[in-house]
Amino acid sequence: MPVRTPRETLDASITSGTNKINLSRNAFSSGRFAVLSMLAGAYIALGGILSIIVGFGFPEITGANPAMQRLLSGLVFPIGLMLVVILGAELFTGNNALLIPPLMTRKCTVGDVALNWTLVYLGNFAGALLFAWLLVYLPGLTSTGPYPEAVRAIATAKVSAGFGTILLKGIGANWCVCLAVWLAMSGRRLGEKLLACQIPVMAFVILGYEHCVANMFFIPLGMMQGAEISITTFLSANLLPATIGNIIGGALFVGCAHAYIHKGA
Image (cartoon, rainbow, N blue to C red; front, top):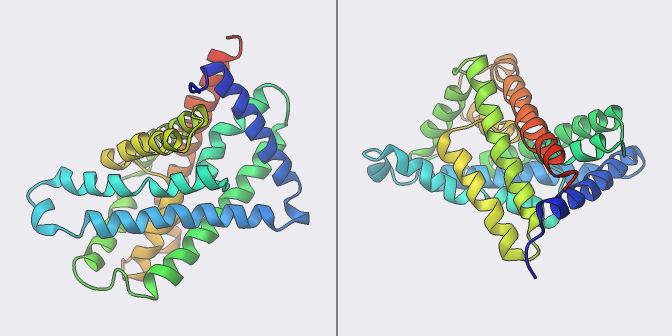
């Protein structure tokens, strides 16, 4: 069976986004939504720790070939989005795009979108933090070898780039992530969906863009490993601009753009 046409993909996004809105409307009467949101944060964190272990595990190679580290990290990081897409978890950055078509077709309100994004964001944050603490820091996955220095350097670099730079990198990151989500929705088979997640997400990692949910893992882990970063600096210097940029990249560049282009197709 061929992949979905752009119009069929848009229709699928409207259905998916509407289902997500209905799920968040019932969030306070069911724990299902909270679990799905926390799982998404943990899945992205899983991709994050793989990108550290693999990307920084060959210093003799990557030291002389800087792009090699990004390539290695980019090859394994997409597993997080693969798990989100295939298993139906609730990811803030993906929802930035998927909730816009229902909004534009008046199947939900701005308040519905804001509620969903807020609750998913908090759930993703909790899942990423718990994964960083329970499954990375406490077992000591990054406590020896090249990893402590690498983790601290990653976190420090992410809070030192400047508000405008992080915002622009946030736009690029979620443009790629939401293109991956959109492409995966056009596929019908597992292989098609996995490949759709792999290529755009690998691209954003290689390019060094900023993904707010991934940073909910990378920066706290760096702080746990001794990076001299305050909570205020973490939130204001990286998470805030990355989040704003991610919303623009996902909602405007993907959700809004594709709904506008294909609604009459």
